[in-house]
Image (cartoon, rainbow, N blue to C red; front, side, top):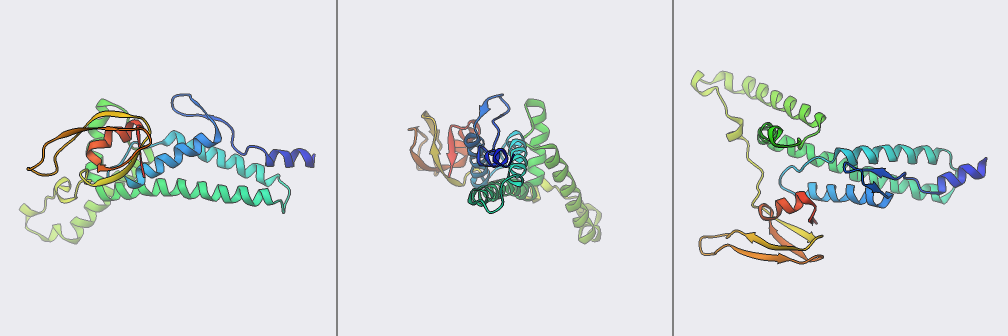
Length: 227
């Protein structure tokens, strides 16, 4: 019995799982997708589409790993190594979710406005929990501003447009990227009046520094990876 438990803990600590397209993922592929989503979210100036399916799968697999480690023999070096890997994965997962919440706090009126338009066109970029958080954060900000300042001002100055008061994500900021799939004829807009727009080809494996607005669709499609 002890040998079976030890073998269970020393083997693969992840089960293979499916993503939103029912694609079978190996443990390495699942963690790779989480790391890619994390880096894209971390370096993108705008809020990206949430990867709720990946997050859910990783959390389930972490629970599976914990169960296996509890059955493992105490003092085994492999247990220590596996726990270190679990802590690394938990850090990536929490950093990914934290990055998204920080962007919601920073750009909440613009994010909610986009969500209203997006519901008519396609899937939401926010998870249900993030929608709730954004709405509650908005309500709290409005109440705080009203109690702190607006109610003490003349009636004609008490209304505030949060879309104008809160800055938008800077889509013209520059980001580093690595090309995963070759792209041809990418239109680059001029940075000044003296320049003209032009097209570039992005070779697979190449790295570039480009304006985020130019490559935002490629980030969304997975053709490039922010680094």
